[in-house]
Image (cartoon, rainbow, N blue to C red; front, side, top):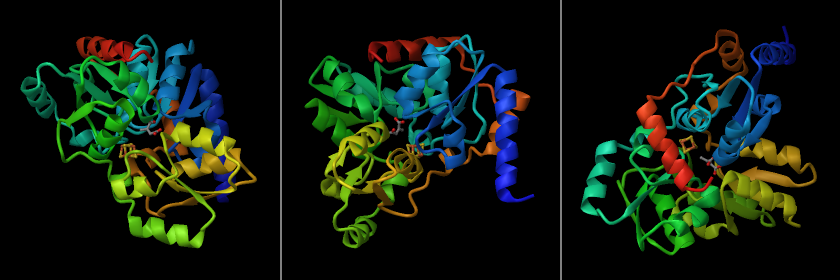
Length: 306
Ligand code: CIZ
Ligand code: SF4
């Protein structure tokens, strides 16, 4: 069977199973093109979380990483939430430990704790608010106090400080997103030389020297909006390369180039059509969160005004 035929057959099976299970498919902007094509909703973690909260279907299939699928379950605990690959674990979230967070909280008892979406759920249950790169100014700005404890990426800690005007105390200096952290200035410079008219857009998880070159820093959803509105014709995108597919699809008259060919998140791309089909067929892998953790993590999300 040709590859196209195989993909077509997989998609048909998924659509039939989706109907049978009364399901919705949510896909993150970093997903593979074929997953983006079959999704009912495509977006960043906040867009997908809001869609998960609103939906009335029986089953939510979350094509993203584990800690994001957990948010869907937290916001809509009565629905079945499926993660097609049990190993789709965000490597950055795996670098965050509860004991580091608790230690920082006891050193700074007057500071509130802000967490990024991609943090383990047990940490969310012990924090005050939750943010994603799209709503940092809003969430951090509203939090009490001049200083905040920050549970996530150290490069994003700078961005939180810039956006909120507050002091930011990271729970660990070791935490980075390996995908954005390996985006080098050398690769970006090569792309800039090759495409001198292109505007550079970067995700706040990038290194400071990459962020300095960027005309605009934003979440994936922020980059999508910017490119739609901009009169520029060419863009160099410094984030996970899955986003390029959506940008090219939605802006057929503009050109998009990756800042690096190696910016691929293995956790995000581990979700394939086969795994999505198997997930709907076998109702796996169900996201289950102990009630006490779920309720506390939901309070942190509600405090954030999402
Ligand atoms: O919030 C998200 O979805 C992440 C992790 C990336 C982004 O900027 O969209
Ligand atoms: Fe985690 Fe980075 Fe992959 Fe996003 S791109 S899921 S933050 S490792």
